[in-house]
Image (cartoon, rainbow, N blue to C red; front, side, top):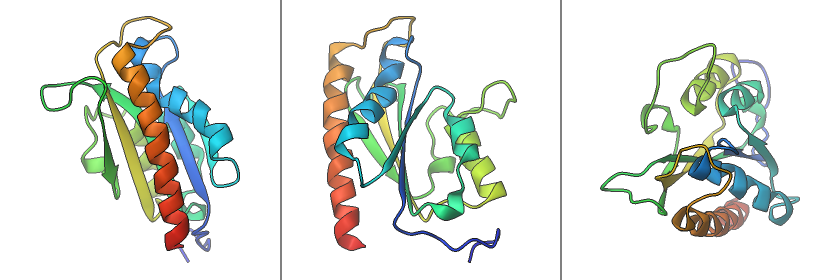
Length: 167
């Protein structure tokens, strides 16, 4: 039982694709989510949201076994555009570009904080970070990030398969 009194459903998996459709490479997480909707059917509930912190805060963490979050972050010398990394465990202390809470914009870290405070976080959390360079107003992604979207989709599907074998 969790502190909220719910039994934990270790089999339920939720995938959250994050970003902004109109901000170039920032839509990468949303694109991954879109592609996973069909391919992960029956294995995960897939959400795509431009307000990921609020979407996370509304989930019942105690009823989720695995939470996968896909989002874009600014590329840097160590993480060039078109690459990605996966953070496992509770990533709240390691989130790239972590901001201070605001009632006007709640980011992934803030959403996880709210989830933890209200209902607890799932036992397994993975954050797939796609590194990107173009965050200006645009409806298209750079070629490097568009290619990376396909790689992340395949990695998420592999991880879902691995999780299924371990259950």
